[in-house]
Figure 1 (tube, rainbow, N blue to C red):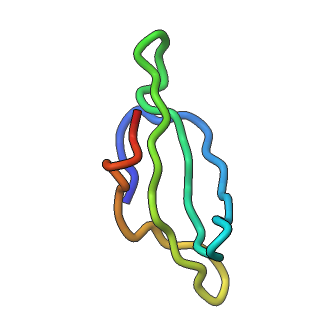
Figure 2: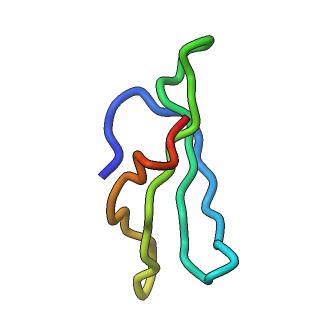
Figure 3: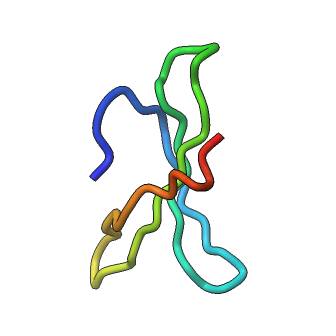
Length: 57
């Protein structure tokens, strides 16, 4: 689950076919940085699996 002061997000599909969510956190600048999460597609939505802190700026 994504909580806290986050900005808009974008779902992208990797070259390997995995879904990722990218958003900026916190919402305020200049502290805002990209945060990346693994997500899975369900029957009618997407579900956040885990934060990919190894990919965070």
